[in-house]
Length: 342
Ligand code: XMP
Image (cartoon, rainbow, N blue to C red; front, side, top):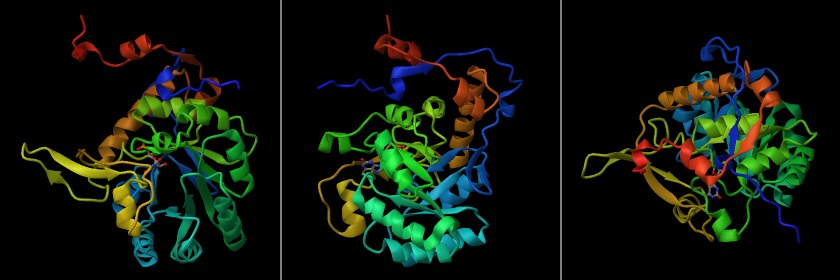
């Protein structure tokens, strides 16, 4: 058996190129999401219950991105969140649903309240259940609703999920900061490699890079590899707008709770029982307003556009050149003055 070598974000760097971009403020990050909807900042917050509730969805919308409202509650509770966003004027309203149980009834209720994006949120998206769910949703809503689906790790899965009716596909299995899928099941593909592979697709579905994005550099690498959008969990968790309370330890340091949706704790809380966990839960340092985080990410992405000799993300995607770096290169890439080197 031939075993393929696959690359992670940290294995690669983008080569700097001659730039004519006057100011990074001029970098064009606009990306089309669906008919009548271009996003100024192609960042989507993950439908996790410690990342996206109404406050995060509102903040993402006002920063030019999009938040997917999580599904770990009753239909009535999620529908009330959609109503709140529809008053507030969020457009498009994006919500997560599952692929079993009450998913169809939930989808109907959420769409009737104004949701325009349904994210069918399952961990292993190359699955009969997703095919059946997409078929039922497409039949019911036709082109009125944007169907996001996932997650997938391979080109073959990406093409299948696209053929089943998905308009955008979450790409990345087991790479998330709170995931233990690769340890529990032995399965996964480094997210950067999955994006590269799926970018070979001749289908029109958008690529949403999801899982393992640690900083704006990874975001630029994801776009360079072919992602249309990135989905973020931990980078946006711990902020004011992420659901959950701030706790303070004895030293006065502030934290917020963050957890994988397949962690034992999350499973028990949202459905009353747990199968073998494929995620972890933790406290992370409190970060303040998410707008500050998004402003930093936007600045890093815009600088990345300039370093690539591009004017915006469209020409960055066409002109990028990746190189591989060694582990010595990775050590040099991190700020190392504080590392106690010789
Ligand atoms: P980051 O790295 O941005 O990743 O925090 C967020 C993504 O991780 C996925 N996710 C999980 N994957 N077990 C998993 O294997 C889990 O418990 C889990 N919870 C979230 C999901 O794709 C999310 O967007």
